[in-house]
Amino acid sequence: MRPRPPVQGRGVFSGTGLIITALAATAAALLFPLWSYAGRQDGTAGARVLAARTVTTPYGPLSEQDRDFVTKVRLAGLWELPAGRLALEKGTTQAVRDAGQHLIDGHTSLDAHDRTVAARLGVPLPDEPNVQQKQWLATLRGAQGQEFDRQFAGLLRLAHGRVFSLVAEVRAGTQNALVRDLADDANTTVLDHIKVLEATGYVDFSALARDLAATPSPVPTPPLTDAGSAVPVAPSPSGPYSMPPATTAPLPVDAP
Image (tube, rainbow, N blue to C red):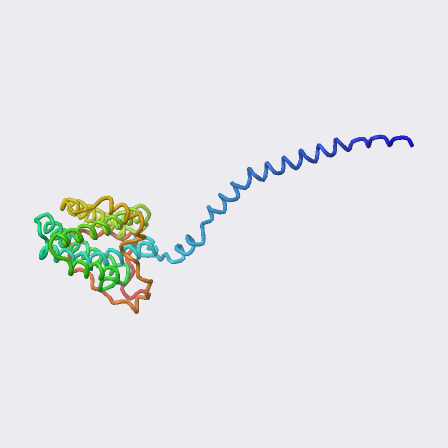
């Protein structure tokens, strides 16, 4: 039997198919990052949810993060003002008592500012500390002597460290003029408190670093509530600050 002659072109077609397959794979690899990036540009589900909860105000868009920030500023004052008074009563050194006075002065002013902003933006505010903050106050009330000094400096410095990063995030991204102004005020107040707490000499920076890395937030956010179920808080009648003007004409009082 004579051997069958080789089929002409089979090797050519086979090689061409491999080349086409390789080129297709390369193109897919190059285009996939572009498709992925385009998908990310459309926004994640979380970003869409946040955008849906943004409302229009005369002072610019008010996001859910903005409202959360206004609430947290109020919560900070609700426990740090009593903590400052405890420091005046129980602090064993002048530095601890000075830190307590700074807390009282700073949060009295900041809380007045926050209440005015909340009233203008229609943000309901709490009228008592949350569960975690009540526990911190109970710890301070039960501590005596230098143990109180250590607990006071440690708890307050941890809380202010967390809030400091939140203030920066809100200040960098908010589109609302009132929230920007409040964030500026909060930044100045929180930084001042951080410095006077550290000046007590009772801040354990090693423990602080561990706690900051391990603790998700020193001011747990309460669940969002409807305005009708929240306790209304009257705005401050006056304050040592000037409110920024509205970006558009203010809405009438009886506007829906």
